[in-house]
Length: 581
Image (cartoon, rainbow, N blue to C red; front, side, top):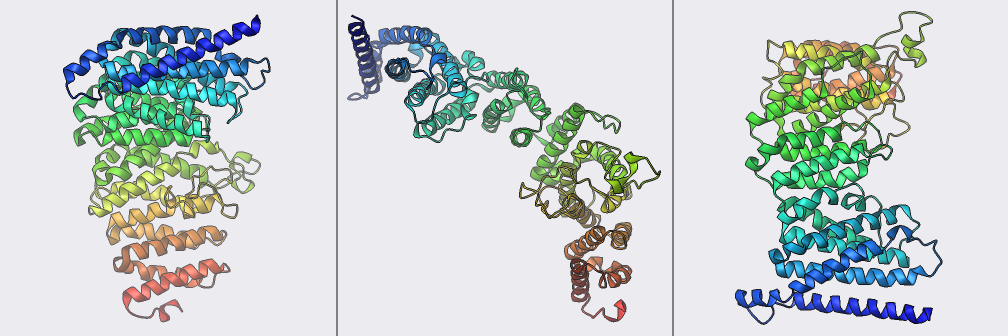
């Protein structure tokens, strides 16, 4: 008797699946054989009862299927049953998709009965795939992916055909356990790739077709929800696809559409920039910076300055006594976004840089006070640099590298425009920046200083000093040597070059540290190569020091000194051998 009931249930499932597939095919081929819109509209009315039936079935299917119980560990015979159920659910969802495309606004009355259970099922399927024991490629995995793909296909139909009617469901759809969670678990199977492709299509449809004034507030709230979720560290991974949708939506919108929602966008970015855990920090920063750049490119120059001012206010005033993680993260994020915008806008960003020159000087002075303060008292471990004990937390200096990248980018842009920005106020701005930068040439950098490198992997043979100060492996990430070269290029005259040259020669003459001497002569070489003949007016001051470096114990320093001399000879057109004796 029991076996007979199972056969009856299986027959019922097969009959329903066949019916849904038949309706789907009929709906897809409705327009064939006629080009008359009126005739096509009359035909479509026939399918209205089918929408009601599908919606009713999906509500029932959502409540009757317990996805939480699906696991490869179950051996009670439920596998075959779920396989059949999943196929019927998939057929019903694909049928709903075809009906939505065919009927469009005529099926609005039944849309909630389709979309709401579909989103609920998507969340349940995602949880099952993330938390239950499901082997990729197994029968349960294939069934769950089939349902997942069909759900997303149905939502794509709504998003592409009737985007305004999807808006009421977006908040639920963008919850951490729903659409955003699909991208967390990497799935390279054929089913996984199909789902990923369809998910991107849904995200693009949401971003491009949803009204901006409705979408942006929802996305902002969704991002906030991700970072406030109960999971340890927040659901930062789930925030990434939402940022992607936000970025794409901004890039496809007009300036007039975006102006009323700029505040909402900044709220979303502030939530992202404020992420305090190191895990996922770079991914979030990159996503937020790309989104900010999309917004900036839509704004006028007059709108840019107030926007940057608001971001500076969010960061807060620099306080060297406040070493909280939250403050440090904000500082790091602020200089990171500033560097990204400056590299994009170049000289157009210089008026905004004027707002933060004082902040840059404070940051550099703080860094030099931490890294360049010599030991003053015996027994005070917090001041014994030679014992690798420092009177500060290394993490508080993490904003230094993105700040250097930002400053270098600004100085390069200024040099291209003639250097008026750095030479303003009779060179006061230049001198304020040069003093701490010059000191940092002789810094002592802790070995545990976290430094971003171009290779994204610090090489064991390269010290933290070489990376942060000398610029080894950090040419695209920010360092002292390249910033000084950019400063010299923007300064553009002998009077301003002299104190900079003095700092370089002072580093070259450090008889206790070969790494400092190497940084000094390498920076001098970079400046000579960059400025060329103009800098030769200061070569006589350099020759005595270069003469000493040619007899250095370090072969690499000798090679750099020789290169400086060779460049000088080529630029002057005469030998410097007599001057070096």
